[in-house]
Image (cartoon, rainbow, N blue to C red):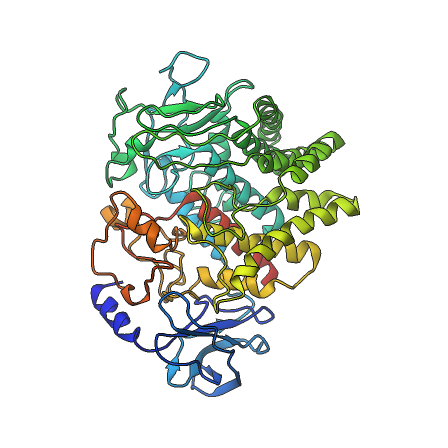
Length: 583
């Protein structure tokens, strides 16, 4: 957004606004827009108008005034769920008009594949966007049973965000979501790119090409049964923007970068250390990926499937030997992924091993882990540490529910999902956006994960109670939020979306990184307390900021406008589900 556009939007902020899902709405789903105003009371009614000629096609009463939210004094829900006719429309209320949107079963068509563009841009080793390679010297070992500084080949995988670190925790989560999206919704994916990410069909859908890119790296990070590594590089990487193939950051050994071994103990090679207690969080994620990959590739590439099966067993055993969580290692700054749960990861791993082998011993272990760690504590909370309860929803419950026949256990697992959803609903029901997710760092990632939990609950159990809350989270990501912008870079193409993300590709080289989900809004107090953060230009959304939450479409704001690997993959999984449901 330009400064001129910002002035325009700031001027309009004095007027009421109607926030919508800019992608549009599926005919049979919940369809709600939000009226928001700094001064004016909500309208008594609103109209849905055909975008071609302005003809009124639907009229109904507006919701009641739900009061203050963020910068707004008056807010109301505009529910037109009863209207199901396909077409292009806008909402008119008083003298306020919404942007044009679609009602169509295919509003999410191609969106999951669209998100794959960002993952290809994140590829390390060979990068198809640059058509060049990067970080080909990685790396030298730390904290392992081998002598420190032993060279090991861990080239490949994905950069975690707009820095060039690589973490197993987020890469494995990403890989699982790609694999699960393909397994559950294969009909939504196309084959337009090759195994290395360059254009050209290769007989394998692109989501599996990308998943294998992640799997190949995870295999390098678990090269033998008694070796497992957790991350490559550390925050010495944070030396400012540069393209990955021009990265000359030194860690004391030329262009080699450190590779941190999973030893189950606190790590951090300078001022700060993490609070690691074990390795099971990393090992469980790996084992789940390898098991699911073994099942998918069984009839595609039997040799690769056999390798994945072997590593699934060894990764799971590695986790059993050292229960606990493995956090990422900091160096110069106190920022790291402070994950503090691990039973969910081992539950998912055991559930996938059960599916792969049919051995009931894995099912029993998965159920024990599920009962020991039933809920994600961030749900219903006002705050949490960065990535404290990660992944942000427990996919292990769904994997067990799909396979288990014991009705009492199945019902308990479904109820675990319901309890988490209900905790969020108790907060969300009091505001017009149905927002009950805390504005902590990566709030959009939490939103996509929570929407996926709602989707799974509804589809596995058939209970539509929380369908409005589920849709509100989807709508939030796609424009029905105080700022009126989609949170997906480049999408929808002719609507408001992030144009100035915190990324070297776009800022330095003017290369679009379409498909990336940006971190999303944070509490004003978080933004004000972060190290080295600023805005590079006048805030186009200034009129819509508040102490409750801020979002800036500005490359200098790494807290709200940085796209992330795992957040994008979570959104991809969600959008694949929505597209399949629309079909």
